[in-house]
Figure 1 (spheres, rainbow, N blue to C red):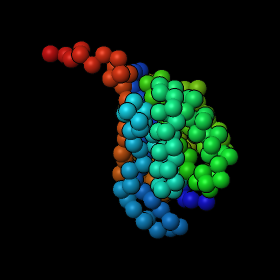
Figure 2: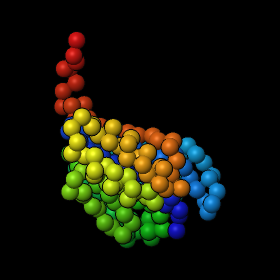
Figure 3: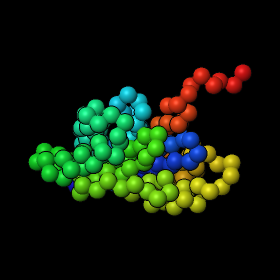
Length: 189
């Protein structure tokens, strides 16, 4: 299978959700690319996603998810379950090797090729070879006052990048804030 050497972390706290990933692509012991973007906005921009695994495979899966979101607008869980079902059974999709994390204003989900759609109990998901380091760090920080989702994601990703040789410090991220989707007029003067 594809090298899942990477770290992708999803942190939800307060009215914000962040998906952050490193940029490294490794093949065996060689760093092929240091700056691959593993996170993106999906659909109308109200869903964000990140992936561990083969880049081309992940893009195909994101396209399929966008199609499912068009069929089921505003229903991320339904779209994810439909994608996971197709991924497990479709002859072409079955060969795709990746794990995905997706989030909207309410829900964070992990989707795998086994047909699993997992929702975390604490709003934190970590995938890839460095995912467990990032996940543990984020869980330790999630309850602390004064740490927003972005700060937690950044600190946790740094810990993962220091611990996991397949993860670099070249982070990219996408964020959604719940206030974006409800009222945008309330600007502070």
